[in-house]
Image (cartoon, helix red, strand yellow):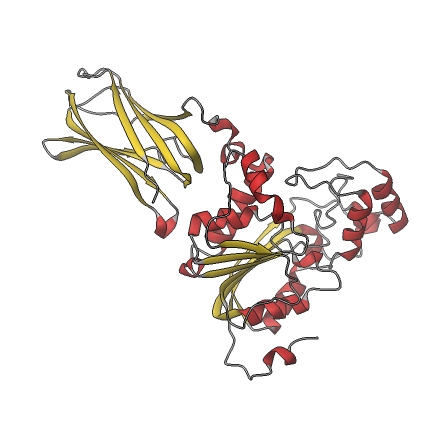
Length: 406
């Protein structure tokens, strides 16, 4: 069990009535990282609370902090009266949030009232600059888009921090595994297994270290394998949650068997989250490294498109160090499944999935030219689809797997 230490100090040490007061709280983290750490201050006078505030709501929010030393500072425009300062360090996500450290300090502040403080967070010497952490950089950072954003969309936005996430979780098509690690550290499932035949997860620890998460081995309960989504090596009803982020479109030859396998291994009333790539959207080609023109994969003749891909040096988007050749990009493009919102809805309904949450992101405007006239508005306008659903299945005959396998 890791311990975390707090070292609060007052500036000035003997606050004067009505004068500014800064409280510096040194935080030493011994664990791999703390998710959503926040410092809470309680100022008391004669045992009664006169001020209660925290960094998360006061401008000092942090998505996560890795092992190291940090300083939260709360600056009050003027000090009131108090004799005791209680400092608490909160961390964790949702139902797992808890106080992980506490410190009590005697103070001698005098005055009539307190103003709400301004908060600041900075690294101590030897720890990475806060500005270099993924949650501070936002969507321009590839690690953020996986570790912070995708994990949050799956776990909180689409699955509502379901208690099922603390059971057994499977990610089909886990890619680099960064989202799985982010989800695991936020929800602490009993077990999370990511499967992907391309084995991009083999660089996960290296990628984490490059992004200031000094991890030497996977946490207990998190593992990966190169299993094929069409033949999942798990028993029926063995998972509480199954995830699929940006993977179904890449299954060469179609993904219906993978959906059947997902249904098989997901227990009755388990949750399934899916975020499929939509072929007819502006991102559906997965060829953004070669061209940024709208819908170029639908407006170019195939030979022209192929020539562009094979003869254009790709401007690599940061994909956790993966540098594919143009020929590989073309192969993957040709293998894409032409998924649409309506086709995905129909296929999931046919498998008796019951929708829980759905979200879409759409284009603001589509400029229709002659080459786009034959495509439905909904298919072009929908950029992204996010779905979560319950697996409503009854008790099955012993030969169920044979009946649902092509």
